[in-house]
Image (cartoon, rainbow, N blue to C red; front, side, top):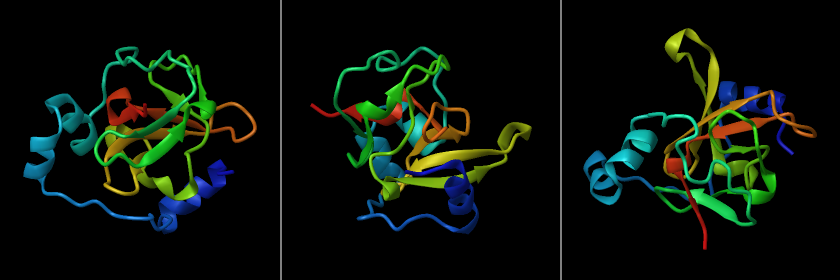
Length: 147
């Protein structure tokens, strides 16, 4: 189980090695993704709170990266945070997510990206439920629920 101290260490010293890498040009991503998904995942955008379809859906299943289809989260780790974005307590596996210090907007946060294709997903915070205490606050458009 990943804890906040692990996330701080990873964001300072480097992330786990991914199982694979997907690298595409800006133009290739623009051709493959809708403009909204491109903005969120490739330009580090944020969607409006409570605008995502899966924000309040808690059916079993798995969530993959909207860009490269890497498994990122399991619905068993999803919870209602009241934040307006889908929230999870743990990634599907340790090396699915990469952690980066984010000093934008006059704050210090930890950005989370897909470790396979570098898609911006959202941020992680140390205010989630036990036992991990983590809240992965994820843009709905950066995820796709697997069938």
